[in-house]
Length: 85
Image 1 (tube, rainbow, N blue to C red):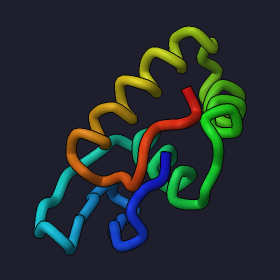
Image 2: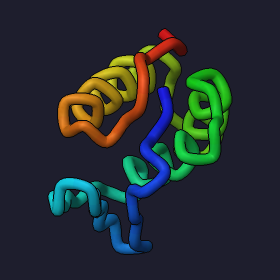
Image 3: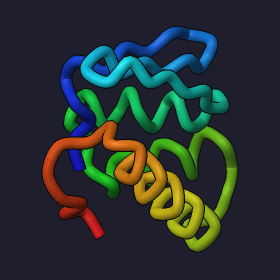
Image 4: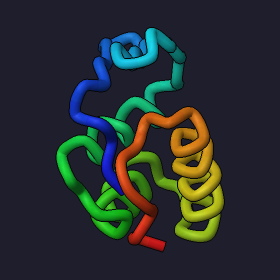
């Protein structure tokens, strides 16, 4: 999965899509995930980082991650298909 290049992010969790004018808010972990996706990180790399940094377990991360990426896909913040599942 890849986030559109033109998506703007603020440190406070504000997400802006200039192509549609839509804006969204996300929590700090969601913001980190979007930033990592923009950098081209894989789902595995993101999982390793989040599990280690936030001391969560892999099953909980995977459920929340795929719910989150499905949501940002529905918001049309992504390019292409989710290939990291």
